[in-house]
Amino acid sequence: MSKNITYIDWVKHLPIGDAEYEQCSCPVCNSTGLAYQYFGFAGSEFGWKLVWCPSCMNGIRISRTRVPAGAQVLIADEDQEQFLNQHSEVNLIV
Ligand SMILES: [Zn+2]
Image (cartoon, rainbow, N blue to C red; front, side, top):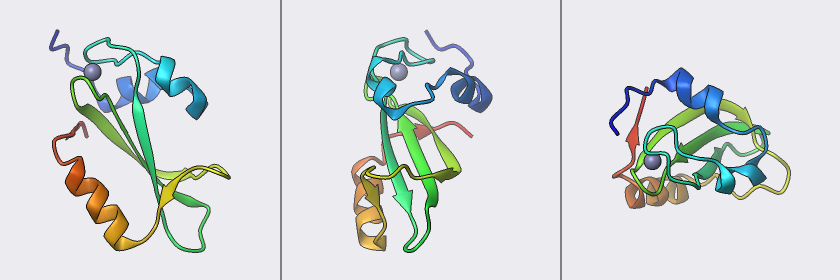
C-alpha cells in the first residue's frame, strides 16, 4: 500500500491529456480518478498545475506547464490561496 512513489514515478504515470485524468489510476493507492487544478499568471500562457488523488490525498505540483486554452485556471492571489487552503491536506511529493 505505501509504496515509495517518487515525483518522477508520478510524472511518468500521468496521462498526456487532461480528459484522461478521471480514468487514471493513482500511482500511490491505485484508486481510479485523479484531480488537477491549474494556477496561472495574468497575461501568461504558462502556469503550474496541482495533481492529486482525492482518495489518498497524495499528489505533485508540476511547475511551468502550459495552461491549455479553455482550462479552468486560478489566477488571482485570493483565488489561489482559497483553493490551497481548501486542499491543504494534500501531501505533495517533491
Ligand atoms: Zn491515491
